[in-house]
Image (cartoon, rainbow over all chains, first blue to last red; front, top):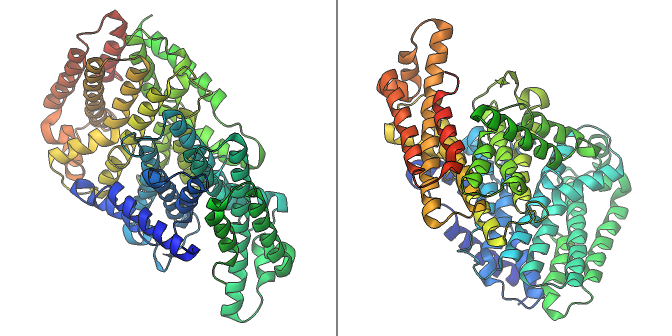
Length: 296
Length: 296
């Protein structure tokens, strides 16, 4: 199976599981459930749950029973998008070509849909009726890894710093910290959750953490790149300079060529971290390259 | 120790533990941490964590090592207040006589402070370095009880229904469901968490759940009562009729006398549920009565 087929097949598994796990749109809370479902099923590549499942597979585990664990990562990712899009935050009207949650359901419900999805992730992670074969110590370890990654010293902190830095020139170190919190932490946690599911040794866990951090960084650098390259294509001119005035980005700080080199370097680091793993880690290797070559 | 002394002593224990557990106000995220701390330390009776600790004591357990579990309940309660106060929700400027979080830190940061506190609760609950003597199965059970109680079929769902019902006449059954989700669920979960900590038998767990539901209901009825009685005192006239037009409340639906009877009936049910418990449950009994007699 090539990566495209693999991604597609995993995406379908994840969406089927999400559909079965998520609250139905019925009863007095139908509107609230509809709001969560609207954003959860608005598309997306499901990269975080795929990373979790592919990591377990790299360790020769069958990840099928652990789909609900992977699904919790997508619930958290979706909550973060809903809250980031709010008028008080980035004030975005569109997400994946569709109206954002608050545009459809109103601001109050969008806040609550995010709150609900975040809480549902922990409900799912702590439900011993799903992914029942996970032992209790591993389950707690996964819950802790994820909670720490997406909390105030992780994803939420990164978004808080991003909001506080708007329109300000920030040093490169701050930018790096911001990205590692806002984007990197949940990606790394997705890999780590897969590592625990797969029964990783301490050394394997460390190597996979390095892999996760490296692809998290690559992901963010490429996001910055796509922003500029996309805009260049549309506008027919370089906009790096404008971008530099408003926000510290990799292209603004280092130029396009150097930024591309940094992205490739991060992907190489990710691949190097997997050196001790056999062919079962090939999808993880392909995923690392995919992050650089997506939309190219 | 009478209840007042007991409440005060427990409140101090909880605030000391929260102070030690909560992120310090330093580094790049100092403002975000300050925002969470502002609301977390804005006062309050800490009823939910006290209920958790008192329930463990009713079962002859020393709850001291489990203070962080109790603290997580206060983090969740505080998050719910911050989000409920937002302009898109109830749009409140004051909470406990102080400006609400978004008035001080802005709307974006208030949303993120809530997100951070909710996530921190799960970080705390899954941290095996705190409350370390809790066995893994009990820890997962507590996490699941709390996540379920405060999610979309509990607290978040109740708030969603409250927002959706604004300005509408809703049937009494809907009002009861709304209250049991919005207020009752976290109160009941606080008691249930204490029951797990205290090693409750299945029957004890059931009895304590009945107690929790009954005081949750009493709490909400008394809130409705205080609203009317408070306003009457201030305005020097009855405002039950006005209230009835806008929102279905117990006094609006049943009148003041009948509402008082319903509150006392709920407290009696709570006391009846504790019949099989010895003197160690006396603080739980006192707490049930206190809920009715507070501010009287």
